Structure formats: structure tokens, C-alpha cells
Length: 262
Image 1: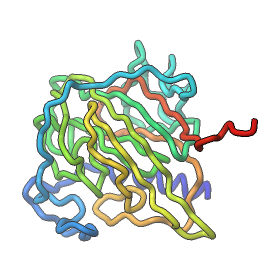
Image 2: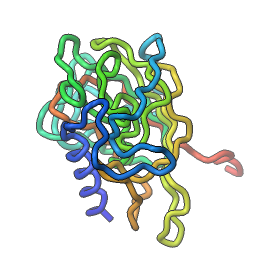
Image 3: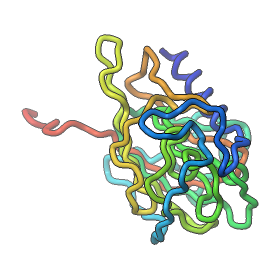
């Protein structure tokens, strides 16, 4: 199981981190997605409607949250030691980072920005991503003016579904994700219920309990593995671009009436 976690997370991050040659308006030779007339990374898929938002919704960590940005990245993250200055962590080359803490069902808040003035074109120049359980990616990027294939734009469930609308703000401004993630359920070694995810981008709901097809893949159709961990780290992607992060915190989702009888 440990081997599965490592190889899946690594494959997801490396594959999704490769700049794709798919252009807007182009239909690539990739598998068809179920339930829609589009293929994976389909450049002919409609661009999400642009919606004006007020930008990042910044929320202080609740008392039961695990805070993932401290004084330095080695406190809470494994892997590359990305620099942290005044509470802002910047992606540095050398590979992605994974949280030391592991999570299953959780609430995640994070804020990010693509540096102002940086040249961005499609998937290049302003690209990163946050992976729930190290496997399920919500795309981080520049989508205020930059266009790419819709299932690879900001707030997309990479390779699976674009956001319902596009509330991205201008490059250089802070933006936020609030994510509710429910891990897949397995019974007797078989998938009983898929992972589902809700994403609020800059205060705007862009995915509501969307069922995931499986762990993120690049140019391929996602499927669920035979074995799946109950909890796994949250990972941030190094795509070679100096994306900045701040105010990242996570809460595990407990059960109703969890304190009853105590």
C-alpha cells in the first residue's frame, strides 16, 4: 500500500506537470469522458463563463485545523524545502511537496497567486496544483485572461471536469480555494462509493459534490485502483513556475454526534 501511494502520487504529479501541446479549439486523440461529448483535455470544450468575483476569501484557521504553512516548509512538508517568507511559500524547482500529516475526508483552505508580470501561455508559466490524498488534483493556474483546455484551467478537476464558471481574478492578485473532499469508500476490497469534491473558488461555488472518476491522470481516463489508502498526504505540485501559497489549513471531517456518550 505504501508503494501504491508513492507511485500514484509521483505519477500524477509528473504527468500532470508536463506542459501539454493541446491548443484551445483542438480535439486531441485521448479517451472519451463518460456522460459528456468530450474527450480528456478537449480543446473544443466550451470555456467556462467568466464571473466577476471579489477575489480571495481569506479565513483564519479554526481551532481544530492543521496549519500547513509555518515558519519554514520543513515543519509541515516533506520533500523540497520551498522558501517561506512572511507566511508566503513559493514553489521552488526540485519536485513537489507533501504534507507530513495525512488526511481522508477533509476541509481544505488555501490561497495562491501567480506572480504579476510573468509570461503565461496555456499550461506554461503559471501552473501548479493541489492534490487531495496526493492523488486528486484541483488545478492552480492563471485563468483570468489565459485560456487552455477547460479541464486543465484553474479550479478544474484536472483531466476530468472544468469548473462550472470561471471566477479567476487578475494575475498577481491573491485567490482562494475552499475544498470539501470525501475520500472513496471501499468494501471488501472493492470500490463502494467514489471520491466526491466540492470546490469554492474566490467565494464562488464551481464544483458541488462532483464525483471523481479516479486519481488524476494526464491524457488518460482516470480509474480507481484495487487498493486505496484510508488517509494520505496533501501535495502541492512543482511545475517549474514560482506560484506562491499562503494560509493553508486543513480540518478532518468528523462524524455527527461524535462526542455522544463521552
